[in-house]
Length: 287
Image (tube, rainbow, N blue to C red; front, side):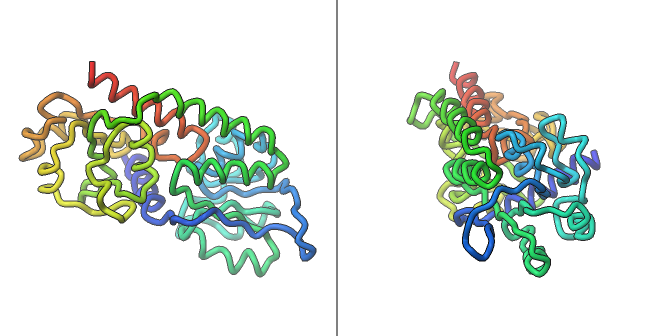
């Protein structure tokens, strides 16, 4: 249970702090020439996944504690948790990286120290499907795996094209957290995933990426699907038993789903699979 709480808290941090800008990198020498990085420290599970997906896994010298996919990542040296309170700067430096893979805002406190020590860094923003595809291609260039990164993006596009419809098939409430209630807004990666699967996010009219919402508003908006992250530790029965929720279509029709947020919330190479997973849920409901 404690592991689930930690993972949810870290997910909360990632969702809140990702930005809406193009991914950024400090790269190259004073001549402006690009170079290939061979000693990389990755500070987020998604970043680690990207590196391994494009064939640069043997260039990762260390990663964060929560990096757990693919399986071989578990054998890598670890430099601490995801945020500033649990990351060890000394551990990062001990692996003599030539590139540190950061997540925007969450890891920006490291930038002055990286620059002071002459270590390059890449900043990930992970705000949209297209943004992540571009990031994968950029990382391919930085690691000397351009062809492999292109194949990864092609597979993502193939998975996305599996969803044939451009129509809205159902509306959904995606629960990020429940104390207080938090959902996915218009500028979130989750909103992009839902839309790509033919699902209307009931809070897509809110500009914030991950807004705090009222329970009354959730009920009022009458979602046809309710999607609850597995790492919340909640059960379908617990959600159905919430006072006043019995009149929500998703509850009345038995369409409350516990979803694999380790897959669905990671803005990385498996996001095409994430869309297919969401689409399969919709298809099951429509049958």
